[in-house]
Image (cartoon, rainbow, N blue to C red; front, side, top):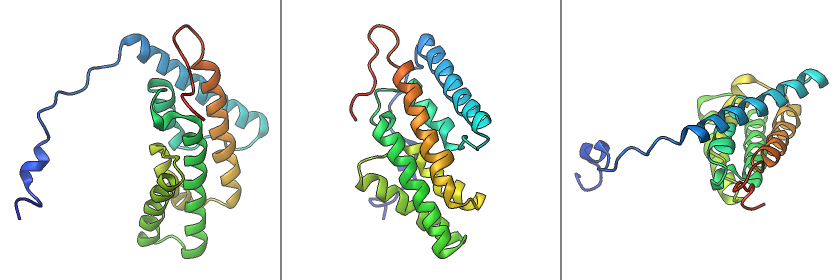
Length: 171
């Protein structure tokens, strides 16, 4: 039994904690996240629609602190948020909100992101946001799709300002 499961495995490896990002990167990530969230909020106010999705905050962390990450690329941001929100809406419509439908929606959303090659970890929370919020199908368009596209537009502009910066790595 100790080969398959052992409490010793939970102690972690001997690796050191990763180094803190340089202060300039932290500052750039702060500014990028601030600008992107402000853009979403302003669009929402201007159009009188909700443009903020809780998982967008975590998306901003990836987009602006780790823009070279595969999880921060445009196809992953838009595709991941779209697929997972759709999954949450479909499960809620078909099965209602039950402990098991919440669980299956998250698991299915993860599998679909991987199947379609658009893994975006922050989007993994979207089925829970959808189902616990009891939102309607329009939530797939706003805030999800329009918001994700707006994040990508801000990232395209912001992450390409300055020398040595290039975003995205791929489409």
